[in-house]
Length: 309
Image 1 (cartoon, helix red, strand yellow):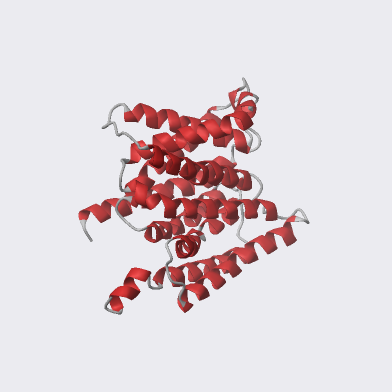
Image 2 (cartoon, one colour):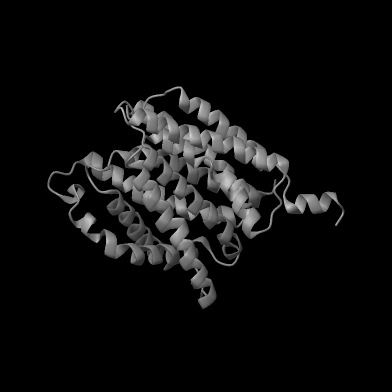
């Protein structure tokens, strides 16, 4: 592996560790200290401010109107919709469920690549998708069955919102790969976060203004948690993603999502936010097995090379 690819792997591994820690930390803020949509707006606005300030100290790149339009759609999928649906879902379900659902990202990347990039769907790929889907269905079904009795922190609606977040993020990874080759990570992120902030402002500013987080009742712990969410899990993590996209494939990048549930579940259990039930390890095995099969299937380029084309 080249040094450049190593940098890509280190960048995306670091991003997923930060995302994994963010799941239980953000959970402590909602809904007591701030509403999910308010927290999402804080992430977007802080990210925009941080990336635009950073851009003053790096090479200034002119972005074409066509690429700005692409970045606008990347902002809708990769930051606005992805973060809002995930934060909203996390506020309704358990950190372990949310972390497990995130692991379906590699499968969604492969499916969307097949639709957009015309990647072939092999028997191994289709089998992996089916097995992984069974894992997700198990999480959602069990959370509904147990949740209605008040015996679990899980939520079917919350889990479905987390799954929508996965679809948005997977689509973003696929469509942003080409543009990530043309611009620096700071240039990409400053425009994406600016667009996201503008899109969310009318719907979320009131939630921020009225948040208990910014009242006299706030605590150092709550402020430290929100700092982690906006700085580490937003600015740093999203800075690492285009660094990785410039160096390795979207499918490979999505495989690092495996780290998120391990980190999130460990911290959530240590913090007393969640507990292990029988469905979670079974669902994890199904999801991981499905993801492994999908990511091991041959790409279109692999099949063309093997056929001598």
